[in-house]
Image (cartoon, rainbow, N blue to C red; front, side, top):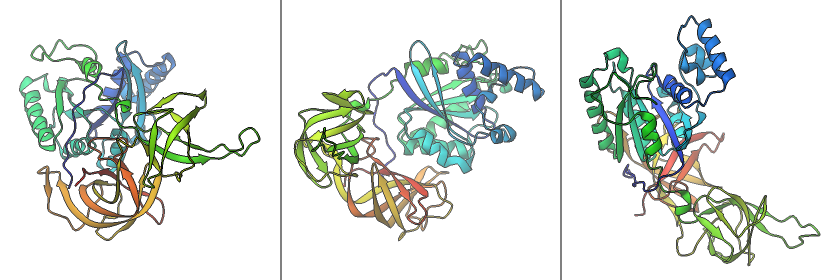
Length: 428
């Protein structure tokens, strides 16, 4: 099983992508609502609607959880079901928050929300301390190499803002995070209901000298930008319009996954191995001399090489690995267990290939937080290692060095359902 480790972050960005996680009734929806409210990221009509809904439910003070539990099923059950993306900002930074469900049956949604996050806020109810789902959420964050984790010990008002209670939970949480290889953890005592230490400092926690949650979110390094990674351009489509104006036009359309591509760059297309030089970059705004991570473009090459959908363009001096076997970590998301011998599809970037799971190499025990010996099967929501043989080669990077091209999906070949999120392990 590949090691659950992470690389350090080095650069402060004006945009932070974060996610939240917490068990049912830990107050996560209220915390997210408090962040939106206290950063003035709520429209007047939204606030009025929440006020009406609060009063209709017999409440007196504004129920901020109603700002985020938007689905009727969520409101009726009092839990968050789906991943929702919330946007807020301060004068210092913009935020994109993936609000993930807390119940164990929705762990797959947590994986989705955390997959692009650079920081995770994990809530713990001060009255209950760490529970199994807290460990599971931490394991998911470690699995996905989320660089920064914040422990928000919520509902401190219900334990009279007791410092020993906070310190006990902080100590246990930090030990668990350390055993999983989470590189950066900080803790903050909060009352999301009343706003203590969320956006404003609490007068009830004179013993706490750290930042408020929002202050930490504003200051934490947001990680290396995707443009700093080696250039990767997965080809989605070959464009050959054959119009009178462009009789010989042949462009490779797609989205730059990482790095920077410029006119004049030499490239190699993998796994086929064809080489050429970029002679043009077309965009919806017209030709451009360069394109960076996140931009959708069409690349024009000097030579008509074999580079269709599924190929990855890279600079020859920094190529990805071309492999026919994967040593990977999997978060199993299907009801039916995974066993060695399973025939599946592996979707990596724009390329999908048939594959065979030849061996299960380990499983993360969520109680001891240590890898076990090879299991006979991976069950729903379990994390484990696997060896996968590919019917065709893939151009991949280790997830530990490039999150953009080091991930893949395992898909059921019979019905197209997603079975697992996968992370490419380091080179042997």
